[in-house]
Length: 371
Image (cartoon, rainbow, N blue to C red; front, side, top):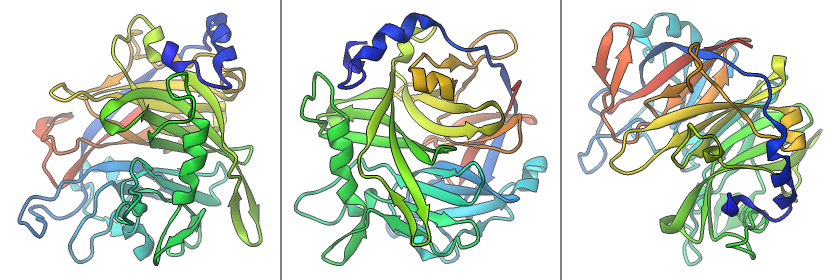
């Protein structure tokens, strides 16, 4: 795990042998598809528009889902909601969808994370922060961190607001990530990184899951890194500390059962057990998608101990043949997973047999845990 001996974290390598926490079992209780927009939608070039579900959060009795690409068409939105009750009637899942919030949600590009504070008063979202151009503002919208209050989803507020020639973003935050993501290979900070997870914890902190780092996107390695930022809620709004801290590093290949590179894809906090649920995905061109799940207690995080690989009832690693990019708990034992299949027309093993995911659909799964 040489590439994980990061500045400020090298000392934690000795703690790896301290042993993981208690085993966690889970099972897939349903798998299916939901409609993100109308079937047959095309772009201005006449090409099919694909749903690429990248994040999800439960707000009251509705699932709020982000698509990481722009969805054209009147009445469509990059962020939309569906009634939670539709999960019990998969035949109509997506039929009750509504655009969520205001026009703000059509401004960020590549929203990869949504999360709620444990009490549900605040909601945060982040884009991938995976690209920027020094001589153009065209990619500024890929760099946005924002929040909204529960009762005002139509008025999200941008954090680290940076205006450049009339274009607003959070790109001023990039330098803090570049600085904190230092490795032996990148002593001055990385040139490329990708955020694919965000979770709000009870101590008024945010954890960002870093999926990839590298000198550029063509030379990036999959990572399981967590970066912390503290935040404060005041009468003027939310303030996030610009001083970030790299608090956790792990290589899933430390387990003999994992023989492939995995990157963090989603984070979610399970308050009853004080565990963080983490999905990691395997993505290699020409290879089928695969997702693995992990639990990391707050104590394990603090002590920098290994996470627990979640297993099925037979003791095998719980896997999905899909790219699990968003997680949200529906109750104490059940989690909803939204999957981003990119443009693959993936087979989906539903309860009524195998079906083929269509361009306007996202794959989802419902997991039940033994917590």
